[in-house]
Amino acid sequence: MPVLFAHDYSGSTRNALEYHSIAKKLVNELPNEAQFVLWDNNFEFVDRSKIIQVISQHDGRGSTEPSQIVKACNQANFSGELIILTDGEVGNVDQADQLIQQFGLTFTKVTVHIVNNNPNISVCAPFARKCPHEIILYSNGNIQKIAQVTKEDRKVIEIMEDVKTEEHFDQIYDSLHNVIQAATIGTVGDPILRDKVVLLRQRIVENKAKTVPKQLLEI
Image (cartoon, rainbow, N blue to C red; front, side, top):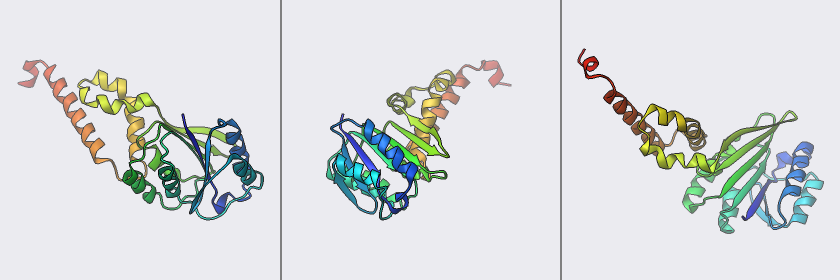
């Protein structure tokens, strides 16, 4: 599977020792054929040696604009596994959302590593909405997986129309919760998904009414 490592190269990462220590570890774990892109308020595809140089010098510049990751992926026609490293000090994420929809980009998987004691996790939102993903936070010396949606979780959207009972709903609840959370983070909501949930609720209520004895309904 193609892998693209998107390294936040913004000015706020300059001389951030923990950030670059984590970057070094992540880069060392990547396959030999991985691609690399530096992003700030621009983007630049680089080779592994350049990434290693940036990390060793604790370098950084520019502002933090996630839309540059989208532009890079579109230019490279990339749809594999996207790994994003950022300090979470983001600018506007709305443009990233708009460009992903405009370009029709999809990813096999997205993993976002955020190194910050008080991060803005909305940087993850545009990339995580419609694909399996993990969001990992490095904060105060701790590592925490703060969100995860698997390929199996994503399948729950396809079967929502088949859910008619409370028992079935209970079975899919955790996956549905994860998917809804990912789809709506940083937005006012997803109207299509909301309508699906409303219809699901109606089916459960109607099905439950059928199981109530007729005598009780007449009281």
